[in-house]
Each structure stands twice: as structure tokens, then as C-alpha cells.
Amino acid sequence: MYRLRNALEKAQNNGYAVGHFNISDWIFLRAVSAAAQEVKVPVIVGASEGERAFLGLAQIAAMVRGMREEQGVSIFLNADHTHSLDSAIASAKAGFDSIVYDLSALPFEENVKQTRLAVEALKSINPEILVEGEIGDIGTGSEIHESAPDRSKNLTTAEEAKQYVKTTGVDILAPSVGNMHGMLQAMVQGSAKKRLDLGRIREIKRVSRCWLTLHGGSGTKDEDLRGAIAAGINIIHINTELRVAWRRGLEAAFSQKPQEIVPYKLLPIAEESIKQVVLARLQLFNQPVRQLLAQ
Ligand SMILES: [Zn+2]
View 1 (spheres, rainbow, N blue to C red):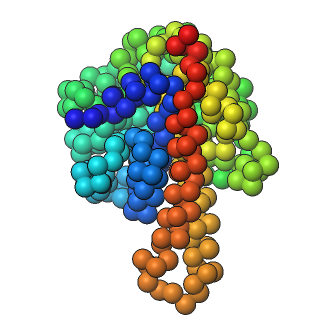
View 2: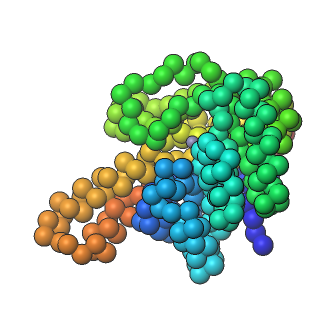
């Protein structure tokens, strides 16, 4: 069976990153799956605690399993930003491939202690499950924000990363490297872009030797995303860009067909709008870069 672990090993060895896209609705899942099939690459769909509460845990797991089996697409399911052990355990039992156990709001030592216990608990339910931990601050909410926090604060240090990975036993680390959740209005319009601290990523990778995830990838300069992959990022999360595309797609559908009431004649317009974003991101993430580590 082809697992997320295999997809990440392949990405690491070949110099590309696996795209992670959050889903809040059935059309998001359809759009992500269709784009992944078109580019012929593995993909991760994520559902945060809020998204899981809306969609239903067993329902998302069944939908993703159905797509995997019927369409033969390597689509993996991640429980994104999980803040309690109960919620993580429920996701592991429902068959998720990975869990982001996010205690980054706690003091470092407490985060380490509780994450280590969670890794043990989750692996005892499913030894194959991958657990991701987070240190540093990357903000909250894949929404459009009024202002950005000071991105030079609460960045992950290489020393913390090394200690965290070694002590907790996480498979994947989510560092704070200039990235942030959500987008500013100027980023939605395209007049501003997020920039990343590539040197920091490289240093974290060098000392942690761990798979790394970049959260809050929406609105980041393409060049920095490519640079981040070269520096050692293996998974890139995109959520806000999809939500913007969904809303624009729905608005276009209603204005193009003001009298239409049949959902399956309106929703494909929003689906296509989401799919175009996923396609562009997958194409960017899956062009191999020359990895510094491979030198
Ligand atoms: Zn995130």
C-alpha cells in the first residue's frame, strides 16, 4: 500500500513538495482530487478542527477513502491543527493518515511534554500514522486579516527544532519561518506577497533531519516557495487562496446564472475556480528543485 510516508520520502529524494489543501466542503475535495489527477501527483487534503466539525469526521474519512479507491488517486487525509488529545485520537481512529498536533500556544517545555505523550498514544492506535508537531507562532485563522503580526517575532530556532524533534518523536515539524496563516487584503489582490526566511529553514532542516511543513503558504512569493522546497520543506499548506477562489467562483456562478436553482449547475463553477488554484500550486510544488541537502 502506498502511504503518506512513501510520498514524502519520494518528494524528499526528488526535490519537490507535496501540496496540502484544506477542505470545508465536498466541492473542495472534488477540486483537489481532479487537480491531483491532472498533474498526476500525490496530494494531502486537510481538515482543521472547525472543518472536521462541519463536515463530520467519519464522513470526511469515507469520502477520501472512496476517492482513493475508486479513482486510484494518491490522496491522503490530515487532521490539521488539532489542539486536544481526544480530538487527535478520534481522527486517528477514523483512519486519518496524519495528525498536526498543535500545542504551539503552550510554553516550549509543556508543548514538548504533551506532544511526546500524544505521539505515543497515536502510534499505539495506528503505528503508520504520521504526527506533526509545531513550535513558534504562525498566527491563527485562514482568513483575510486586517493587519499582519510582526513576523520577525517567535520564529523557530534551529536549536529548539532539534531538541523538539528528538524529544517528542514527531515525524514532521511545522516551524515558524516568516510564514503566517491567512492573507492580508493586499495579498488577495496580489499587490503584496509573503516572504520566507530561507536560511532559517535550511538550518532547521540541517539540525532536525525531519520532514518539514510550511503552513500558511497562501499569498507567498512563488520564488520563496521554490526556495523553501530547496531548503528542505516537504509539505506546503494552502487554504486561504482556495477559500478566496471558492467565494469568487460562487459569486461568478450566481451572476452568470441569476435564475438557476440547480446546485449541480452552479457549484461546478466554484469547483473549477478552486481547481485552477490547486493546479497552479501543484505545478509549482512538483517541479523538482536542486536540494541543498542532496549536494
Ligand atoms: Zn496551518
